[in-house]
Length: 175
Image 1 (cartoon, one colour):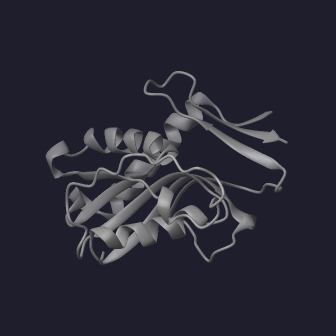
Image 2 (cartoon, helix red, strand yellow; image 1 turned 45 degrees about the horizontal axis):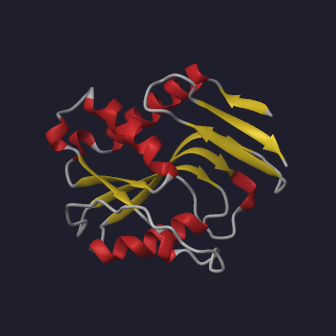
């Protein structure tokens, strides 16, 4: 197993991503942040916490989206749904989707389908901690990237994010 981002690097990267989102969406007017269940929520919680250091939490529209039943690539398994928590309309809003790893693009494609149940956004942007660049099955790219890496199909990216800053890391595992 090879460490891609250490605990310190993960913290710096999350801070950078939060600041990049704020640079493009000053005061988050007409912008909503949505973490993708399950693993994207760990990252989105940390990004939102970082943003709250710079602007009032009351100005942040933050939700969590479960895309389990919108996926097209795990039909044979029994699906265990997570909780969707979006207490606002995304109609004509700028949406920033947040996920941990962008690989094939299937998760994001499913998220785009699921978003339509909550309104028609004006614009959708994507924020990811890790972009596994050369394995896309859909023409999807991230607007905010923590780290872009080249991987093989027989490798797995393991993102470990805890509520505290302890033991946060990103590692690459050869299967």
